[in-house]
Length: 343
Ligand SMILES: Nc1ncnc2c1ncn2[C@@H]1O[C@H](COP(=O)(O)OP(=O)(O)O)[C@@H](O)[C@H]1O
Ligand SMILES: [Mg+2]
Image (cartoon, rainbow, N blue to C red; front, side, top):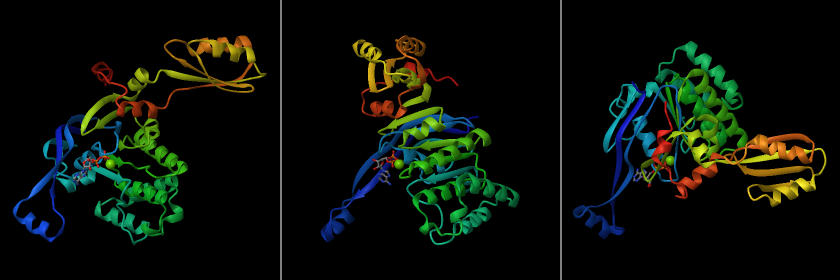
């Protein structure tokens, strides 16, 4: 059985619209009018134990609404969700023992009490055995660098500290699944890297299933093999990250450092109809090419004809650029690509 099974899941928000002022309030008593928002529209997917899945899409796509239904915070309008044999919105308490959740926009910790006290309360609420608690606290403190602020209340923490504390809190009871809704939003790069590393290890070493929504597409390259793209409440793509890259990210950039300047080489690349000289600074060159047109070996051989190589590196395009184009409708995903994902 799949760990997470979602079928034809829909969430339609229905909000009463009020006219302003007293007249509006009185009128409201008699004639209710509603505004509807179809936030999630008949989505289906399933996730196996141990997978790390990136759930991405532009603002307002329906990501957080999906996560809230998965965690049991929201009740679906129609469709079904089963998580580890439970229906989250009907069995919230039991479901809570299986899952952890981190919402980048809002802390789950008590505002006014020291972090360490919050952790201790969570230990009691979730009935975490003392040895498990101690082991996890030691590990999290070390990996996430919690020691310096364990005695401070949440309200005194920086955003990066708060996020690390929230992450630890969500994992104290060793959940099978962790839902992370924009866990790196607004963080500086050093904290992001730390959090990514932590999540990655959690998945690799503990086998914890990860569902990650993020705006920061660098997060997903680091952590996830599978990608689900949602827009306007509909799933646009569900498949491997690599398949998307292979199809849409064919460009490679060859960066090379030569022993001496090689003006002739630069000239040849500039003249070449299928190569682009990205950058040249003295003995450094960057050459862009299509990996289906040339192999890296061919580029290397060409460069070696004109100069002695001291160092080189080949860059792939960032998935960031590819997915932006998908959102903007510049690329069309086809069924074949979806089918390329075989598990
Ligand atoms: N409680 C709510 N009431 C009404 N509309 C909502 C509510 N929550 C979210 N929405 C709307 O549903 C859509 C999806 O929101 P959300 O799931 O938060 O998107 P995302 O997390 O992908 O940015 C948006 O148009 C949002 O304005
Ligand atoms: Mg959101």
